[in-house]
Length: 146
Image (cartoon, rainbow, N blue to C red; front, side, top):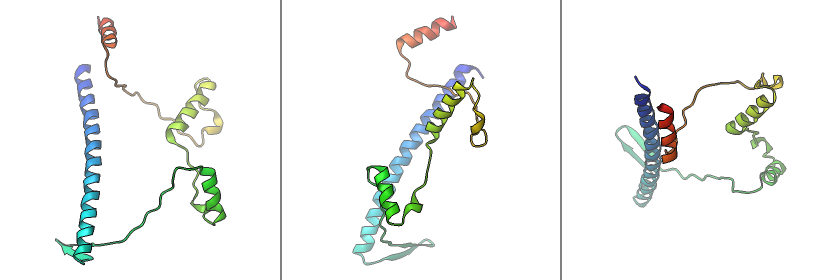
């Protein structure tokens, strides 16, 4: 298989991934709308439980709570003051960690410093960058091919 064909297949897979992500978003929205309509119909009909095709559908009143955009430290203090400090979890964003470790390795002649070896695994791979081609980019690529 030649590289051009492989690139075309790679692009098709990326496009399919994007399309599936869009379809998933649309499907999740449709599920939410159908759920809301069904819940209202069950309330209106005063039927909190319905059996259909071997499944029992029951109306449940749920409440969710989400953190507002605010000062995290202040919010954490309020949780701790009210006995909810055990909810706080220290996390590290994977991309931020990767960037920090890359910088640490770069400062150490390309090798991850020893103090991180027990905690950080290194996975090296080749990735393929994809971006919209401009006329200048196309001309340069064609010139290199020739």
